Image 1 (cartoon, rainbow, N blue to C red):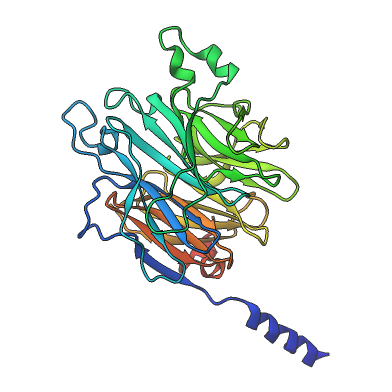
Image 2 (tube, rainbow, N blue to C red; image 1 turned 90 degrees about the horizontal axis):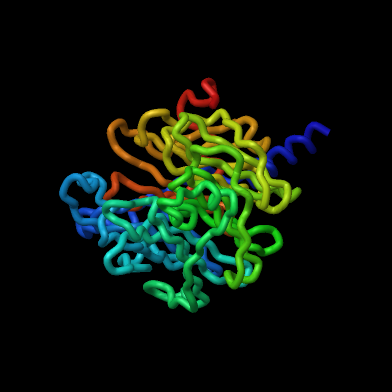
Length: 378
């Protein structure tokens, strides 16, 4: 009996993956200057290629127009790159979307059940005076993206959420404030029934809601606002029982969450979870083994440390944490993460606003944790 036990143990150890970690820049900022580079998103294509997007460019503006915030400039565009399956490096970056005279911001992507690539981003109509609150939401869909360079877009459209509760709140002096200001950030969720759910937040009211389509963007429904204010940039996961959980960026030092039991139409009152953050972008994904993973800045006052945490109980507790970056005074933020078909993880994030860093790792690497992390916990 003892021999059988040891044989089973050896077999289990053999099937466990070894920790994996690889890193690279999508482009070298010393060779290619893309200006202000921020807010990336990554997807794995059906053929195994990787695609990433971000926003870039931005000339310096004279005071008082955000002279230190070049992403508010009217020449900001959506850039992207592709890493073919088996390649050692990313392709030379290319333009994914550029609208003359305005700022294109906060891109995100998803691949739907038909295998079509979605690009969703905001166009800031009022820059430089009126920035996030002037955002017009746009989306593009492509079935032809398995080739070098930018996708060939089949169609594109604007998306103008109409949510009665916000329209009632909109002031007479600015009646468009409930139609504009909707910003995407994290991946759209492809619901278990194939519907595309885009997590959004309105920068005029700091209220979150979801845009849902079941016919590839021909028609849309909009959720009720998530109860509570002061949140932006929701990220969504769907559990096997159909529950959808949203996690939110806040300014209160703690990530918040809300749950939906009806496919994302209505939401529970938000509550804080035990993960700290400095009011920066974050993303959660559900792994195939049922574990929940969060990538985020785990400090209350800076974006110079970037962490990955794993929960085995739907986010009630976070058992493992490991850091992708930890260099005081630098900036690593707005992460995006996916689980590839081989179960490994790919993440991209802003690297000092100069380039996008791509890291490839697995859950076993996270579970090794940083030295001394397991004693402290999360």
